[in-house]
Length: 395
Ligand SMILES: *Cc1c(COP(=O)(O)O)cnc(C)c1O
Image (cartoon, rainbow, N blue to C red; front, top):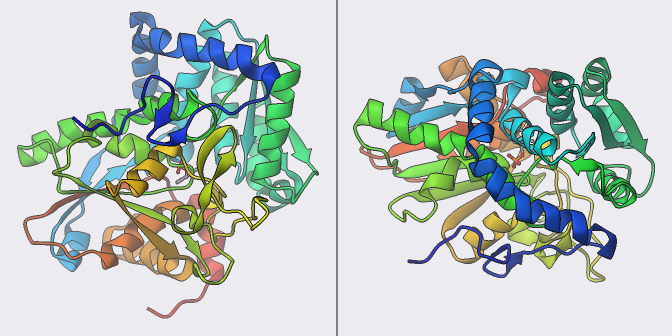
């Protein structure tokens, strides 16, 4: 049977792999050789599950959204990752990676962050585990995301503002990789999404796969069957989407629908619609679609949502799109804002701007009344209130 999961060499079709500097070969190889064995061990499984339950607050509810369902003429369930500790799905991944780091004897944790959400989730688990934490963040983002910077500092992390390039996520990532090259023996690099060299995309999707594991169980309890007709999620690097689809990925009864950030519109140049506009290139150590210019230089992406504003895309999703296993819609800023207001007013749930892109997809699909739709609300909107209040829109 055709599979959309990773192959022996770390590829998804022609996407993925590990394109890294010579100096990192040993530590990436060490991770490749270790992660599966550790993650399959009983001690890891036990500690990971316990922390997900008692610390992160899992399982997250699968909520039947009645008023939203009525509006779209189908049955919509919301997977409530917004209710997790620290406000999104990101904690699932950082808990897992820090447990792995400890089992590999690493002493120092480094991470890159754009909006600061992954930085906060990493600083959180470092406080929990009493580990040194260094977070690289573009200087522009440090200024834009002041509250998250203060949270990371309060949690005991060192935040290093990066002043190269455009001073955003791409530059923070380069700096984190540079740090890793200087300290390969004692440092563990916690990557925040299904991006980076193999094994990161597979490791992060496995850590996020708790989402689809729970959906199967919860849907069976509520609907008497474990598969929905549609799975919908937003994609930045792709981790909440990968977790949402993981246990359903090869089951073609289910339509996978992904929302990427259209920004001000895919024809305006101010966009982060990587799957629609990207060409194959190398970013962050993986072969995938990249928004780049004619010379192969990575272009600065734009989205109103800081978490979707990434010029690459996970190799899993590039492959799903290339092989038409997933349907991808760019959702523009104004559509996401309108969708956030809609969810808030119909269901009393203020979503993160990223998650609002997934809600925005509902308008693009033609549902049958019998369709069961599961949509992941990746995070809560507290961090985005300022943006919601500042943007006027006509519904
Ligand atoms: C970071 C973030 C995203 C985007 O990251 P993925 O890896 O694509 O899931 C989406 N939603 C929220 C709330 C986030 O914090």
